[in-house]
Structure formats: structure tokens, C-alpha cells
Length: 168
Image (cartoon, helix red, strand yellow):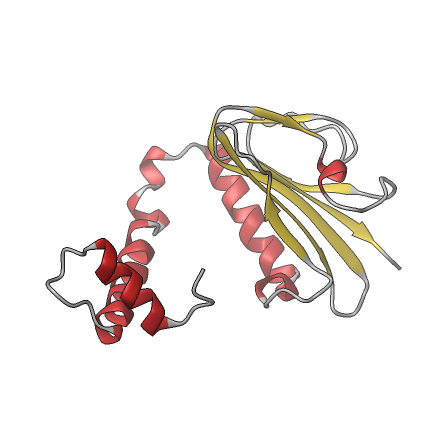
């Protein structure tokens, strides 16, 4: 909405009212962002939760980490050919999807994930303008039944699946 203009963000926050005083400043906004990221980094540290997480989930988390390491380009910014969006209207489910092509054009990835809400059935290849051929399942949340990228999958809250297609 503000195209990341911090001064405009501060004006909007001040108009809405904030718990930090009469006038929220750009400096306070930046500090809030740093504090939030530090708090979230601490909260999401697996060392705090490993005794509450099952072996399947731990294996999935490791597979996600290994995928990122093996495909470092996915951690870089999106290009004009990439797509990241969510299904409108949300109708009780926030369902994100995306498509990316490796910078060296060796492979493509397609993913779909629910961030919250009721279970939703979706065909991943129907969400973006891609053909159905050649997709392989690379990652799927534990207990998620995924047949193929061009087949329906029912995603419950916080579930995801990612497909890879080699272009070589």
C-alpha cells in the first residue's frame, strides 16, 4: 500500500493509533522491525520445540533446509518471470502459491501452501500458467497425500507441497 515508504507507513500508523506514544517515528518503526525479527528468530528456534515435534515433522523440516541449501537461488529475490500470489477471495483459507525458474534455466519450482483456515482442495498446476508435464514432488508436509502437480490435493491449515521440474 505504501510501496515500503517508511514515512508514509508511519503516517498511516499514527492515524490509526499506536501503543508507543503520541507520534510513532521512522526510527521507532525500524526498531520495531528489528525487535520483531529478533523475537521471531528466538521463537522459531527449533531447539525450544524439538521435544514437542514428532520425527516426521523433524524430517520434513530437515528436508526443507536441505532443499534450500541445494537450490540457493530460491532464497534470492523474485524476478519478473516468477509468480507469488494467493487465491482471491480467501473464503476462509489463505492459500499461497508460486512458480519460479532457476536463473540458469535448469529447473522450475511450483508450490502451494495454506497459511491458515479451513482445508482447501486445489490442483497446483491450475494456479499458474504452466503445463502439467514433468513435475516431481520434492517436498510435502507430513501426512499430506499428494499424487501429482496436476491432481487435486487437499491442504489443511499450515500444509504445503513443492514440485520441481528439470529443464535439462
